[in-house]
Length: 196
Image (cartoon, rainbow, N blue to C red; front, side, top):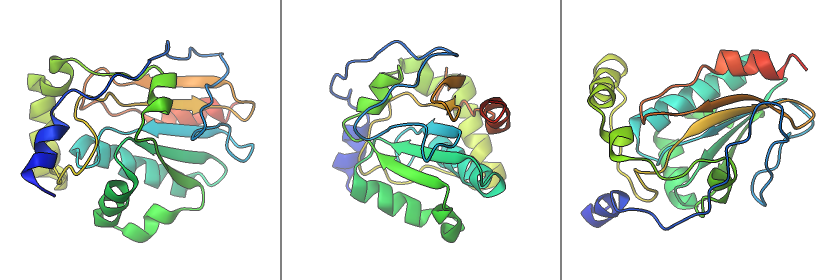
């Protein structure tokens, strides 16, 4: 990782067409890299911020723990960092063997097509740099030891969010993030997608 990579992570990413976010009760969007439901199971999708973001790390760790606790639900983490950066980031996370839960898949979407299909575009300055978000960043580091990691690829302005899709491919949960530090309640999403 170089200072140039960190610098470019702050630059505005290239334009990606962004659809309206799928509403509850609508068919989940499909892209070449992301088709749900996966294996005919209810599916939780976590669109991550860039690899290196502490909030992306916490989201992924929560997703991984949810996958271990709910083997009948499929979990997908979507990264917009490139494949090599995503692989190195995953290898650096604690309890790495848990990252290979059979019902947990990582999709690399460096072109951000799936992000756009789910209505996740570029954020505002306050989305990333809000005082409350920066305070929560410090709190996450102090309380859980999750700090910024090197950002080799990806962009800090890309929004994240989570969706829940039932076994019939219908969106039952929308957890779009309003700020960089938002953490969705996967328990709520799981309860909604498994009810069908």
